[in-house]
Image 1 (tube, rainbow, N blue to C red):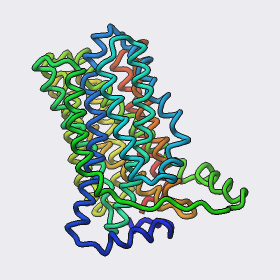
Image 2 (image 1 turned 135 degrees about the vertical axis):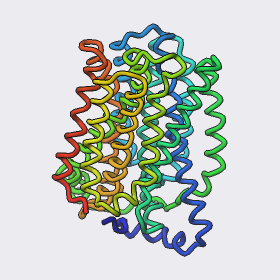
Image 3 (image 1 turned 60 degrees about the vertical axis):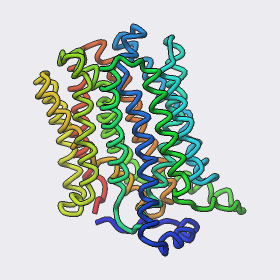
Amino acid sequence: MDTEINLSRKVRKPLKAYRQAKEGYLNRVRLAVSMFYFSMGLTFATWASRIPDIQEALHLSKGELGTVLFSIPCGQMLMMPFSGKLVVKYGSKNTVFMGILMYIIAMVSLGLATQVWHLMVSLFFFGIFSNFTNISVNTQGILAESIFRRPIMSSFHGSWSLAGFTGALIGLLMVNIGLAPKIHFIIVAVLLYTVIFINFRFLVKTRPPKPKAVAEGEVKKKRLIPKLNPALIWLGVIGFCSMVSEGIMFDWSGVYFKDVVKAPESLVVLGYTSFMLIMALGRFIGDGTIKKFGRKRVMQISGCLISIGLYTAVFLPYVIPAALAFMVVGLGVSTIVPSVYSLASKLEGIEPSIALTAVSSVSFLGFMIGPPVIGYIAEAWGLQFAFAFIGIFGFGIALFVKKVATE
């Protein structure tokens, strides 16, 4: 079962003061970290909830939408080599603050796009700051988990998922009252900036490491460790498969309900909302479930649920069955990524920050690459076939878990 994260001495020492603090203050720290997860999730969900409207406004086909969405992973891949280094140099408290501020600005620019090129540029920067914020906020999650000395990572990701559900409801409201995406995005931005400034001072603070002379060979050895560790590779693959499935739910569930399910306009967001609701619930109860049944069994069952849900939506493309199927997918993906991050931080011989950067970046790459690839497949063979193709990834997770020690 989960044990305390084996953080380095430089990180453990500043955390001692937190462990000696009163329980009320520690809970406030946990809430602050949760609210930054929530803010990041609401930012992405706000964009995702209006993709069908933006697609229609710019007259994009499914293939063209896939090409446009590919701007996000391009930005993410550009930022990937730098995010971890910036977090180490300036501290995750400072970088998550700056990252989320810029992430929200990029979201607002998406709503202001009137040309395809403008949307692609905005999505490129959206990808840059999503990667930067993702690494920073998960570093905060690891530090908070170390303070509490018990697994709470799933609950943080539950806050992210709850934000997705909240974003879907807000999106549904905005669509039904006829509010344009740009006004919708600005309203959410004001709300998020308020949340961020209230909670920033309670984030976990650790001093950035002081520079010291280290042999060049030793530095190179540390950088190569993640690439040579088989467990880290398999964890990255598992996270990638899970977040590909999660990514298509964010970007394509609305389009699926609109074009395949033929749902009324007022119910187009129902599939996305169903998915997000159950994913959030699964993450809040995930730590207890893993403790009771074991991480390996939960991860294997979760992978199968992803596939079962996707194939149900493919073969029963009607409003109620598809909504229930998306709930099953949400339950399946709920605990995979938090488990992957928690396991990566405990691998022997690898600094947690390095392991997290590697696994988180590879996993989140699936979140960004999956949606545009779906667009190309859908353009050629249809959206149902594209969802069926992604369904294979869930069964893959169930097989790949055997490659990693999970207890």
